[in-house]
Image (cartoon, rainbow, N blue to C red; front, side, top):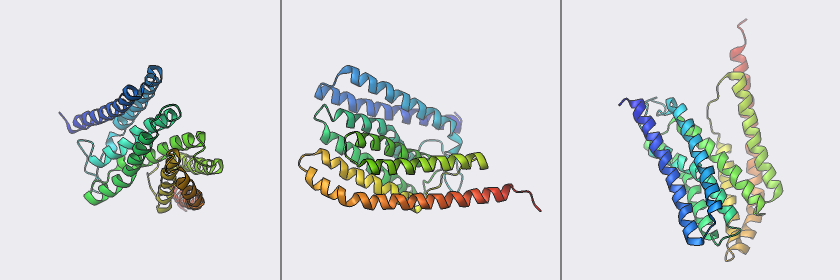
Length: 267
């Protein structure tokens, strides 16, 4: 078996295992809390589509499974990538748990599971740098997971009035600005490097920290304290996100300028 075939096999096993993990979690909840079969079958269908798309993406991007800066190609999905993939795999589960929390007594499980997945965002980057396991595919996946998670949770939190409408709009503006800017850069340059800025990381951390506090509003025992803490942290997170928008704008401007200068014919 070639190294490429071993990598594809590792990708398939990893994605399949993550699908089984998510499906098993919901199946356990279905049996414990008598969740309707129609609700579960809908979730399993969505979950299957998400993991199918993830599998296709990873196979197409298999050339990006290499260590940086050595460019040594991997023969299997490394631990840090598994952490990031777990975050992507769990996004539909978190969204579905939030929806079910309105009808079933699973709020505590939803909070605990979401907090655990949030922690992977702190772990994967730290572990990859400490162990020298930083990969190009990991950079793509990290960005994908952050934004997929923030979009899904922002929509669910807005539905349950856990976040302010104006904060939701700010979050969507930040994400839209990122996508439009990167899309235009792709058109101009023909490729996009998955780069994270300091302020970008700070804004994501601020948003996830705020959402972790917002989740506690669902627990009657902590709802009052969480409400007070949320009211204090929300404007702080908003300022950090606004700064990250300006920072991303400046970064994109410099990249556009450099691309145009390289494309300009010599005098």
